[in-house]
Length: 302
Image 1 (cartoon, helix red, strand yellow):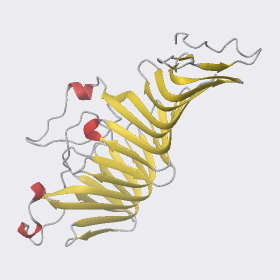
Image 2 (cartoon, rainbow, N blue to C red):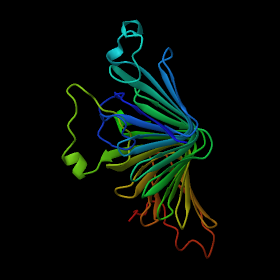
Image 3 (tube, rainbow, N blue to C red):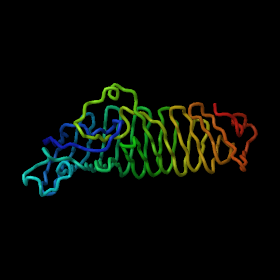
Image 4 (cartoon, rainbow, N blue to C red):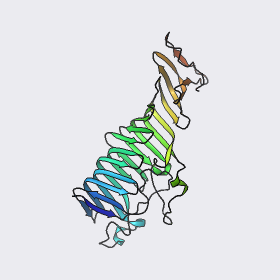
């Protein structure tokens, strides 16, 4: 039997324009669970167990276990609250926790992990555990250690063997990937929903926004159909399809190799070039019969 409860708790956070995982709009959160819902009044905690689900607006959180931590709205001390005041009225959720087989979905995106914490005070959602994955219409982001959403900055951070795979199979891998989103010109953004006076909103990047820039740090690797490019750090800008790698750069195509300190990769055409820096020389190992398609150092990335 699925048990149901509506948590009329307002989620407060910082100002943001992007709309993925939007949990900050007004109205109740509907929570359902197979094995029961427990309200711990003294701990100001609601626990949903067994196939638990929380829904607000267009966002759904599924997990084996859900915990909603609440407090008096506006930070009033707990002793100032009526003893029988429940998870509603003058209360607000300040932290959501999900454990086991966590799946967060919107109309366009799907995030998966073993655990998730949405801290409204810090305006950040963090996914951890095995098989971390964020799937959107244009790409798939995976990571070993964690995936974070920072809504006020319209930013996502993937840590630990982080990988972005585009729908045309372009790949960017690094120890850490930082993705920045920009607001898309949608009907929702052109006519924003009215907000209660004085109420800030918090969200995370994705729905209603698009990828503007990806910063890569540590053991960066870019793969196209023709070559592999590696470096210490890099920046990829999807709007123009260009990636810039810095530090110990190596371009490998077949048995051919070019090395230097900076490279520009055109992810749309698959053409790369090494950039000579003052006082440094670029180097290449060209294998006869295989070098005709390898760009010469300094050749333009068309």
